[in-house]
Amino acid sequence: MTTPSESGRRAGTNVLREWMPDRILRLMVLQQLIDVGEVEPITAEAAYPAVRGEPYDAWAEDGHRFNEDIAAYIDDTPVDEAMLARVTRLPTDPTADLVFVIWPQFDGESDEFDVTDLSGLDRLPALAELFVEVRRQADLAVVARCAHLTAASLDCRVPLDLSPLAAARGLQTLELRHAENVADLAWLRAQPELATLRLHGDPQALDLRPLLDMPALGSFALLRTAFVEGTNPSVLTFGDNALVLAALFVRGVAVETR
Image: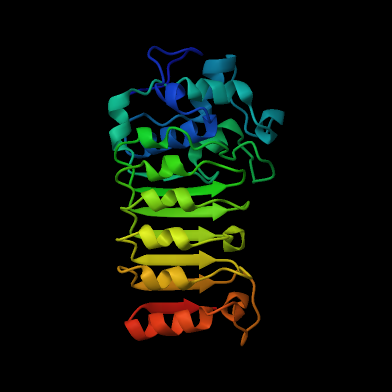
C-alpha cells in the first residue's frame, strides 16, 4: 500500500504518466485506487506541509485556487501496473476528494478539472463502468478498447462522433447526456447486448429507427432536462420516431418519455 511521505518526492513511479497524458484522468484513477484501499488517502493536512513545510489553512488564499504544486505532488504518488486491475469503475466528474485537496474551496467555477483526453483508459484491464463528461472533441475508440466495459455514461457537452463505440460490443447499459449533441445512432445496431439506453436532453432531429434493430433492448428512456407538462419531446415529431416508440412498446420494451 502506498502512503504519502514527508517529502515532496516519493519513491517509485506513477506508471499512468506513461499511458495517460491527461493529468485529471490520472487523478480520477488515483482516487479510485484510494477508494478501494490500494493507496492510502491523501489529505490536505498531510500534503501541504509535505510540499511547503507549513501548516495547511483551508481559508487562506490557497483555498480559493488550483494549487499546481499540490497537484504535482499528488500526481507523483507511486502507482504500479498491478494496482490498475483494482479499478472497475471510473467517474470523472470533479467531486473526488482529491479535487478538494488541490483546490479546497472548489465549487465548479473553473475548468481545471475537466478531462480533455481519454487516452490510456484501455490500460485499466478491469474497467466495467465509465462516467465521463466530454467537453472537447475526443477519440472514443479508446473507450471501445476497454474489453470489460459493460456500462457507460457520456455527458456529450460538444457534438461527438459516437460511431467508434460500435466496437464496444459488451455494453449493456448506455446513458447519453446532452443528447442534442448526438447526431446519429446507427452504430447502436452493432450492440448485441445493450439492454438499457437512456437519452437525456431534447434532440430535434435524431433518427430512432436503429433502436428497432437492437435485439437485447429492454428499456429505453428519452428524458428532457427542461419541459412543459403535457408536451412531448421534439424528437417524436421527426421522421418515423413516434412509430418507432410504438413498435418498441408492442415488442415489450419499457419506454419512458418526458
